[in-house]
Length: 87
Image (cartoon, rainbow, N blue to C red; front, side, top):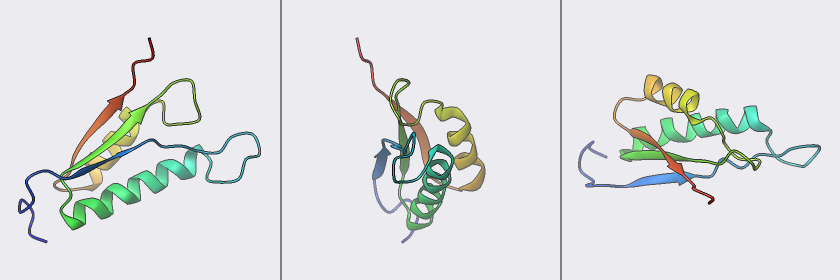
């Protein structure tokens, strides 16, 4: 796919991970999966990779290190957060 051919197409990841003996990827493995997903999306021409931030659930809570890793290892994709405000 030619970069720039799609006007706007991205994804939002919730970053769920397993805790306390649950089956599934732990937080570290989930970060590696998210990074690989964003790199593959960038190669396909996806415009945006956004990550939900939730501080009190087994989901991504500190997005900036992940966003920095994605920005440093991709060429075209825009990165950002999908902050949930739980008032």
